[in-house]
Length: 407
Ligand SMILES: *Cc1c(COP(=O)(O)O)cnc(C)c1O
Image (cartoon, rainbow, N blue to C red):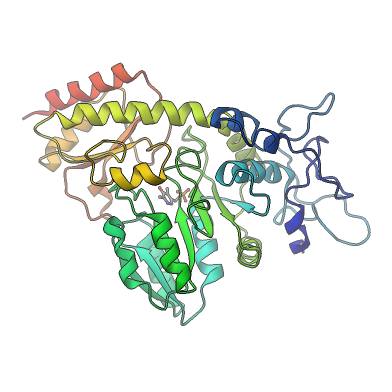
């Protein structure tokens, strides 16, 4: 219906977030801040041109359809294809993932998995070869099985040591997840992207853990940055969201078509909440990364802690590459306690950290990852997501819970 709307995604005026039907390109408030710092860019990202009596960020537009007399051309025809609240959010995400790159297109989805599946299933055909990480997000094995059921050959290799390089020959698409969840290994995006492109493969990077303020995959050579907005991008643990940012118009047209035929679209309320949350992204990411480093440093001194991982920790096996390609190291710290029972007692003893899955929220969470059975991790493996609490309080709580959980 509105594949023609593709090029209209960036045409938004101050008229309550509605695209200018005449197609005029409004002064772009977000791009006006393009050369500014991350905090400045985050608070302005995706905002429409100021208009008298209009709110700064227009509220959610609830519409299944739009007034559409005559020829059914976009930008806004039917609610599964486009929504003005998505348009503003897509612009915000695009400005953060690819500042100054006007040709880049962004599409928002109902969840990170909707975005992930949209890239994989729109780009791959029976007989194609796809390379996935073997230590990535826990739903990837399910995706793999589905790809294989459709006749796509799937190869996997670990994230560490750029091991995916060894299985790239003949690949159509390389899927990278760095830092990987939950093991926090890091690979060299630029090196892998160059090798993949030399073989004619497209490259997608799952940027969920880093957020666009931690890492910008498109600048490092990727064709797609894909992420779950459920985690730190929105940061309050109250919505599910996903996005795809891409530079290749043909590939993005296929991703858009996939969104249309599968219908995995975000609600306007979720899209608006996400946009509102992005205004504080820089503050949250800075605070949470700084505290995550403090927590990792405290854990490093503890004899019962093994396998401690945080890419921002000097001495971490991933630190060297992470320092090359990341601007902030994220809010997740992983480590292992000696036994499953010890890990359970530790989680139970924490007062400021909720025992819950997911990560990236303003309230710290932790879980024994092995309880899901999907990741190849030891029984005592803990994934700790550092929130926005005062660093001293959080470090004290973690150290106290370690003491309390000892035998
Ligand atoms: C959570 C997550 C996803 C999936 O996102 P949802 O919003 O839960 O669908 C994908 N990749 C990574 C790295 C994740 O952490």
